[in-house]
Image: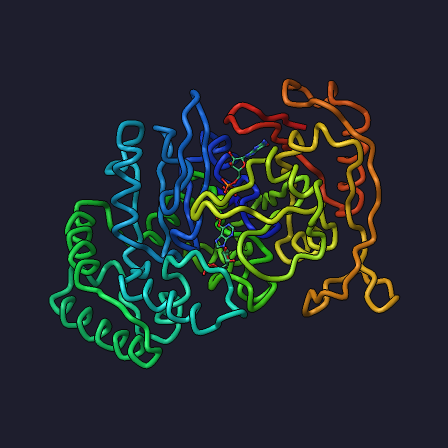
Length: 418
Ligand code: GDP
Ligand code: IMO
Ligand code: MG
């Protein structure tokens, strides 16, 4: 009877989808608790690649139940596309339960996202433009529409009045838009959505826990994109941290056992916002190329840089990480020198904690590590090169947290358990 949580410790795309897919057989249920289709979680098995945006990454395991929790914001059009993409390989109608409390992303939320970004001009966030921020704004502002509302008599009334309000804002922003086609498609998707298992997932999940079954909560985005603790305002609009799993699923913190924190052996970021260890040289380009660092949702190139241990330590602290999972060290196989930042120098002062703003005058202090060569065919920790073990050991000591899983490639089975 326990809830384990897996979440990203950097700026997203740490490899959450791959690891959740790998771990799923150990759990009765995999549940998403926040975010929406801004997420892109990549899974590779049997030489096939899938990118999931809304559906949890346990969906390809037949014995695993998947849940979209109340904390998620849900786009029915993207959901339908996703179901079609995977229908040959997953039984979504049977294996997925959706919270009636999850809020809907309306077509006008996406338009508002675009209008706000345009108005921000050079200060824009680099949003995925999936309507995430306007949907959460309506939720917190008590103007949102929830999935359960689609069965209510006054649904159309509520929808029309919300869309009318959105249109007024779009007009205020002088944003040119056309919503009718989008709305027609959205309404068709809503009708299809009615065929899925829409339930009070908070009862469902707690009943399973009480019956002795275990649940894995799958985070989206990463700690540095959390609306409270990330690089605000260059963040997403939900709580991506461990605490988000409790409010986003309706499960007590008392039920939490392991908190898996996943990080890349280096750092990436999509969109705008500060990134102290970002590389603008050939090393950055090489990481991007070898790591195939292009956004799974928008295809945008990801900015790349060295591992930032201040970020990692902060994320371990905020989340209470019990087990670290490291991905993509194989990408650094051909590098002669590998660096990690262990402190910042700000105005000639050493700094071991993240300041409120990660401003441009931060100079990361780098430590150099020896190359480790190819690791992608190695299956057992003992067989890894000593130089790589030194890297692992250093991170464990620095974060005071054990690294229990190492991912060495894109495939489900490219995993070393330590
Ligand atoms: P997520 O959003 O955290 O699920 O991560 P993404 O799927 O957006 O990005 C991670 C990318 O790295 C995907 O293309 C994965 O297939 C890939 N990946 C995951 N783990 C590894 C690894 O250990 N090595 C390599 N080379 N690629 C990996
Ligand atoms: P996964 O789950 C990486 C980034 C966007 C933008 C900022 C706000 O795949 O790790 P939003 O669409 O939420 O308004 O965007 O957050 N972002 C992500 N970056 N991985 C993600 O998800 C992301 N989801 C949002 O690029 O900078
Ligand atoms: Mg991703």
